[in-house]
Length: 226
Image (tube, rainbow, N blue to C red):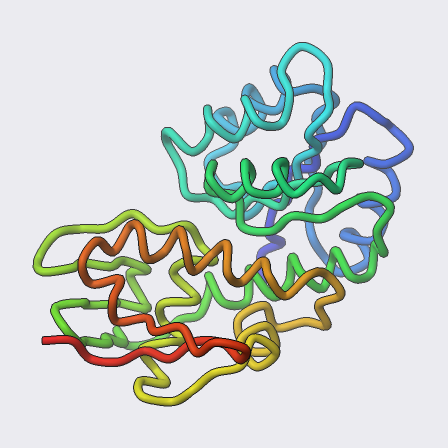
């Protein structure tokens, strides 16, 4: 099996080496960039990068700018690294379409587990699996969503959430259960990150966002709406 390429972007060589060593042990091919400008050059020079691990605070071009540039052309999964834990920074990252948000310091093993979970789901092969309800069509193989015939652009995590909700239509889902099934790893952050994703998802779904019902004090439930 061909090694999947991971682009690690951080201005600290020590941090890049730490992440690279753990990824290489898991049989990934690692490309590196020490600043945002270099990251853009490497990304567009390589046509088969599977995932980007991107630091926020860098010289010349920070992680937010890099994310904007890449998201204009690609849906490649992006894991954002930051030394900050400000909720505003986290919300900005999700607004820009990142897929994971990891605050330094972090466990390299946990980071690799997150990378593997993302790639495992984005690289699933097989016959097209379609979910349809209330004018919403989710094609899991093509990783596409249409609502009332209109294509809707979702981030990786928003797509996974919508898919999970539709697979469990009519079932009350706790935040803990959503984390265990959608994030697919032991999550030690604030479960309210789910609320952030759901808010963005509902906004992109327009009127069909009403299908995702809030169960106060517990979580959410997807219901068909005529």
